[in-house]
Image (cartoon, rainbow over all chains, first blue to last red; front, side, top):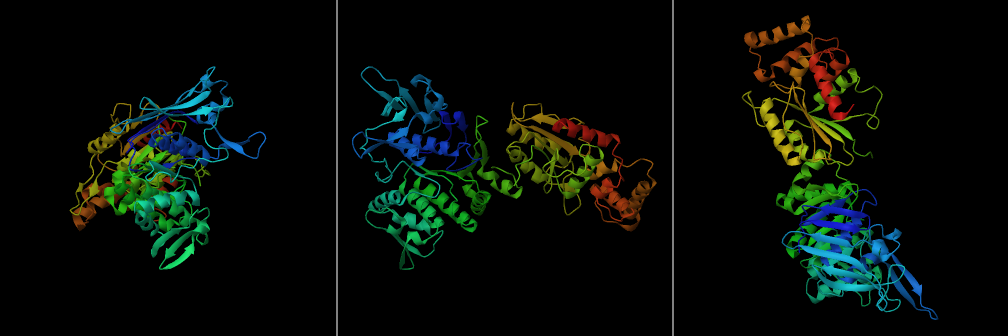
Length: 350
Length: 229
């Protein structure tokens, strides 16, 4: 899958918004609360082909969840706020005021995903319905408060990461995936003998890295061992940059023909490492046919991307920067071929 | 760190920067004592004509931009043999190189360069974009020809500098290229001021140029029209 463009309608803060001329690797910039993460979510939902699990995953990453105690017991239901997905959803008085969400892309691999609310009937509760390319792909129950409820087991959180051997997308939040999520993805990499790809990416930070070991039932960083020049030490002893890069490394190696979404890609990484990080991301994304959408606030991160392209000019077509600004209907596009002018002329893309 | 300025003028280099800055101060477009944040217009110096042509497709996209202007020279690059070449020498070829870029940017106004400069708009709701090709949107030349046109015809010292420059070439084989004659004349004249070898900016600031002559007025009118000042 390679999206050439993306249109978002009625999703969160966007009434209608378009990104044109998407590249293999897309860096999203813009002010706080401009909607960068919403764009990542839209790509994830489109990439997931209308999988309800993807939607719940995005809500979980936002921690837009609520625990409702079940009467008479210690157990509780986890519910997700469904109304906040819709543009002006928080002020909607009734189901029919929730204007359907629409994501679509044109081109060879065009996709069309609609998310609408099916109002309740006398016998059926309200439902959030996903329609992909015209056919219903999944649905989920919605209560009278607009909350998404069930059918998952009481108290269990929805964590689909790592459950599939090659996920269609992985969403890496700022600061990285949880050790639990990483462990799931790592098991899948081991099964498909692709762990060497992740190790290769990790060499950006640790040249001598030879192995990564996840203990069974990994929950914390101390359950992850990094082997450098034959010495093993737990991930907990390394800095935030190593954890962040491990998320990127494992995520990109896991996906085939899908999308990698990375919120704040430069988190924890020294500026001198960023260019190598981009080089590895660009190379690996091309090899595995992965489309990357990442966000940043960092000028160093943009400069490093320019440096990676300058060292390998053939990559210029593989890169684009987009400034997200809700005041306009379309994201401002900077092509990879303009990166050297942007950096040398000190043009502010953010 | 500051947000990008809403209004920005882009020029070919530091000499142009200082000459234009002091012309704007003299003409009352700027008042003294303003800094980058309070100035109604920011001026950015790049490095030569090609860098401005490369800049045009990108800089207008900066956040909050309402107007952007480019001041280019109508001359070309100086080659080893003293002739001008490379990216387009002459006003018309320079304008053609610009209008090709403007067409790609979706400038909605007719792409015609008149003697009072170009002012257009990128798409129906984009920023205004303008061009002034030195010296006067018609002749071949550079900012030096523009500055020479701001000397009074009665300026005896400048007339002498012109004469001396010619003599230097004909009698003493001075090697300045013919295409840069105005630059040589200007340098000669500025060498003889109370502070020898004044820069263009210093000379403008010291009142050596007459900013009330028509060439300066025409440029200032373009600035005011483009930037709404």
